[in-house]
Length: 188
Image 1: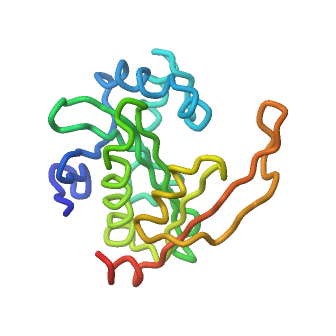
Image 2: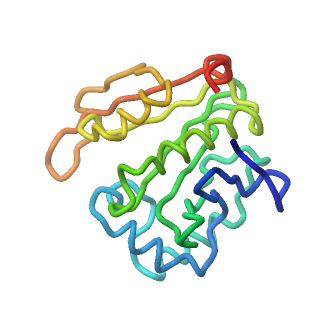
């Protein structure tokens, strides 16, 4: 169940998490979780104080009601008041009402259901607040936990792109999952 307060749309609150805009006081937590190679390769900042601060400043001006290309939210663990990861959503096409989501969770907080909880909240948010018709998620094909999470929450695999990108001299495959609003709402 999602609760909304303060900003008309944000933050989103789940049983164990608060999904909210980043604050400068989050910088050390962000550096901590994003320094792990599995996250560092996927985020849009280097895990340094200056680059994270710039990214937070950039994200401050992005509002969900403005159809963001990408809106990142801090994944704050309520019990610890600590940012343990990130969850994001972007509008791929307003004309076709399509969005995309993505997440990253600090290595010490994985396999505890936090990514699943956050992904469910952001999908519900995308369908109910952003009025999307379809939401997709993408992952490196070798990131089995990520695409297993997509399957767990009811998304279906829609594409497998072979040799999609060259990373450190190695070709990597990408998988794309999706779910429609009526499919999501009938399950949740």
